[in-house]
Structures are given as structure tokens and as C-alpha cells.
Image 1 (cartoon, rainbow, N blue to C red):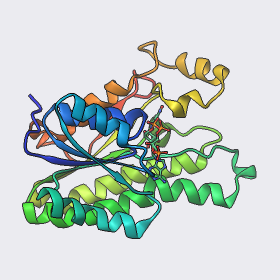
Image 2 (image 1 turned 90 degrees about the vertical axis):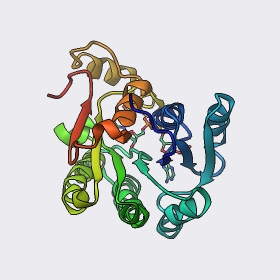
Image 3 (image 1 turned 30 degrees about the horizontal axis):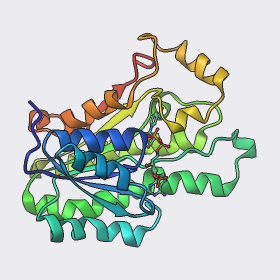
Length: 246
Ligand code: NAP
């Protein structure tokens, strides 16, 4: 089940947290993974994949650099022959109540979390349309579905991904390309470790399954959506949140 042998995948934000786990899982299922992060930050994740017998390559890209991002899918096709799976995962928070939010913090979150997905999906579609197949997976958030005080920028970017994916799913379905969203709840990564302990406890109390999610909970969902078994699922928002929002 969920074999990805022969597929080529691009995962952004693959240096840490959810993106690293997705890169490892896709490689474990047989995909060749292009792991993207800034500088040489994805090198360790790639080393872990290669040590486990998988195939991976690290690329250095800042997802707010539109020109570099636009060129990336073409470069992957030139090197690996195809591009089957795009996981747009890189994301940031710049939390503040709206009345105090700086314009630059709004712009940075929208550029990283939403505009980068537009740029990458557009460039990835060229080979996918030619191949008449592909998987585009955007990593949104429960916050894009239910909102969260102090995160208007983040919530807008993550809700934007949901609308984007549903619209694009309709555009490319006739070419057997699916576009889906994973909406993680509260997952144990650097991003959540950055918030106060009290906030973490408050959030955990809202999770029916009684624990924070693990990065592997999200990676499993990504492997499924990337697989042939998920061929009839598109425009879907897969909540992986322990029941905190239903
Ligand atoms: P994380 O541990 O903070 O990792 C963020 C990743 O994004 C890193 O690999 C980072 O790469 C990359 N990134 C950030 N800005 C970038 C940029 N400008 N260019 C290239 N890469 C960039 O975060 P995470 O918790 O794994 O989150 C991954 C995704 O899941 C995000 O979209 C996040 O919004 C979403 N999410 C997380 C949670 C959660 O509870 N953790 C919940 C819902 C949704 P560098 O190493 O280069 O910085």
C-alpha cells in the first residue's frame, strides 16, 4: 500500500519538523525526494534518508524568492526526469494581535505560507500537465479552519491555501492531477515549542485524543495523499488534529 517507487517528490521546509518527517516517509515508500530548505539546512534530513537506503537530494531555496522557486521544478525535471509530488510545507508564524501587527509581519507570513504555494504549484504544473498526473499537497492548519486570536496573518494564509487548493483541484482534475490540503492540529515541533507552556496546556485541553500530534501523524497523511490509492481524492482538506476541530 502507498508505494511511491519511481516517483519524484519535492518537499519544502524539509529541514525540520513536519517537512522533514514527510520527506523521510515519502522516501521510505520509494520516492526520490528533493528536500528544500534555506542554506544547507536540509542536508541532515537528506543524510538520514540516504543512510536508510533511500534516494534524496538537498536543495537550497528561500520560498520567498519567487524567481528561485519558479526555476526549481524545471531543474528537478532536468535532473530526475519528472516531478510527481509537490508538498508545499514551509511555513512561519509572526503572531500578534491585529491592532499591533506590523505590516512586515503580515507580508512575511502571506509570502511564505501562501504566495510560495502559488508560485511552486504553477511551476510544478508544467511537468505534471505533460505527464498527465501529479499530486499537489499543501500543508495548511487547523487555525485556517477555526481561527485563533493573535494569528490573523497565519489564519488568513492557511485558509487561503484551502481556497487555492479547491479552485486548482477543479482546474487540473481532467489531467489526473489531484490537489489536496492537510490541516494539522497542534503538532510537536519547533513551531509549537516556541509558544508558552500555558498556551500549550490550554491547546492540549481542547484535543479529544488527549495529546499533541506527532510529525509522523502528518507524514502518514501525506504519504496517503501522494499515493495511487488516493487517486480519487481531490479538493479535500484532511484534518489531522486529534479531533480538536471537527
Ligand atoms: P518548523 O519546525 O518551524 O519548520 C519550518 C520549516 O519551514 C523549516 O524546514 C524551515 O526551513 C522552513 N521555512 C520557513 N521559512 C522558509 C523560507 N522562507 N524558505 C524556505 N524554507 C522555509 O515548522 P513545522 O511545525 O514543521 O511546520 C511545518 C508546516 O506545518 C508549516 O506550514 C506550519 O504552518 C504547518 N503547521 C504546523 C503545525 C504545528 O503544530 N507544528 C500545525 C499546523 C500547521 P529552515 O530550516 O530553512 O528555516
